[in-house]
Amino acid sequence: MTAADPPDVPRALSRRAVLAGAGLGAAAAVLGLPGPANAAVTPVPLGALLGTNHAGTAGPGIGALAGMSWDRADVLWAAVEPTQGTYDDSAVHAFGARFAAAAANGVTLLPVLAYSAPWAARTTAYGWTHWDVRYEVGAAQAAVGSGWQRRVTRTRISTGEVLQDEVVVLPKDRTPPADPARWSAFVDHVVGILRGTYGVEYFQVWNEAYWSAGFWYGSPYEYVDQIHKPASTVIRGHGGKVVYGGWPSVAAIARFTALLTETGAWSSIDVLDVHYYKPSDLESLRVACVAALGTSLPIWQTEIGYSTSPAAAALVYPGLLHWAITRGLAQRPDGFKLLWYAWQAPASASAADAGRYLRKADGTPTSHGVCLGIVADLFDGVVPETYDTHTNDAGLTTARDWASGSVEGFLVGGSKIVIAVHTPAGWAGTHVTFTLASPPPTAVAARVDLTGQRTPLALTGGTVTVPLADAPGSAAASHNAASSIRTCYLEVSS
Image 1 (tube, rainbow, N blue to C red):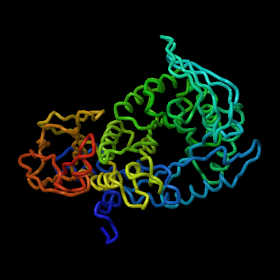
Image 2: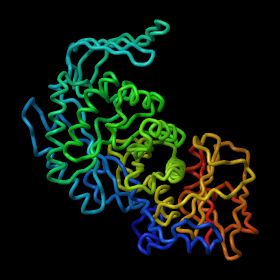
Image 3: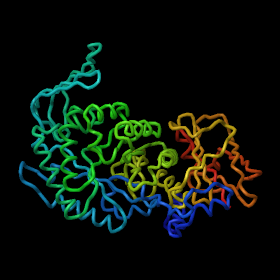
Image 4: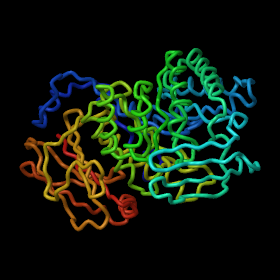
């Protein structure tokens, strides 16, 4: 910690295991734990799985937090083609320059190809049916700001119930384009430059294309057939890879997988991407993908977080990482990513909203930034193995939905056990006693709180009791008290 660091900044991230490339099998023997079949596995840097959104000019430096190596930003059709047929390549090259600057610092900038250019947006009436709802969008009326007044009617088909019937303002750039060929031309122009000149490999197609998410006021089938698939063909034609446009958690995973099956879109995707989902949902997505393709595609979440619960990062990262490791995705090149939304709060953000980001407007870390740094520190900056040969007296399991509490166990470099302990607010228990698989007499245990403060614990014959209460008045106590799920860690090392 430097003199300028606020007290909640975590200790510097250790890169010991990454730099040494330590064999996991030999290290596992130190704790009497089973090592992997290959005793010379090179650890995967944890930061290869981690990233953020909209870091802007700070993008090349985001690796200072947990080694994160991915950033995400929009490439707007309106900026690239402000009028039909007139391209402003400076907008594309500006993104390319940002991509190159980030790449020079080990960070990959993921472009999101979005949204409709206002001149290209549909002005005529249109409608569609999805599941049990009929949607009708009337013709554009008066222009209001960046949108048009339009009558929107939504009716439940099975009952005839009118869910909505009113004139609203719909943004022009979230309206489907009148001529899909113009969209394809935009994608071809941008991808040609970014792929050919700057070596960009991955391209995301639109963002959260679902009515209630607010980024696409059209049919999901139209999105797949007229936006996603044509863009996929273009991107692959340039040798790039296609990231689906972030299916949002406002709609169930079952709707996403059904849409991909009904439209035959599975084979047009290189990376499945969803936003703000729990491990159980990702498992449902993986299972559906295997059923459709015979194997799992990479599964990313290019948006997670954006939460006012101060301990949210300490909940979502261990849970999602544990799931990905058990499925082998975390060990595959680009098989799994977690990008927090977003990097830094704008100056206009309220105190509550500023807490959703990784950095406050003044650049200091929020609780989420602190919590993520501690997770990375506990893992020594590498992707660990899972360690599930433990029991506890509280009935906590490696649940995939968290609401009733859970635990996730990890074996770090073969030399350390880390168990994340999550309990719901108001939970009656004050301690959790763990029994581990035969640690040697030299092993020592500690309770680690959200901010990295360690408290030694007695480890006797593989049994250790972890108190759930944080130190009174501590930052960890404050963060957990304001969260629906409270978290601490058990660390056992030799």
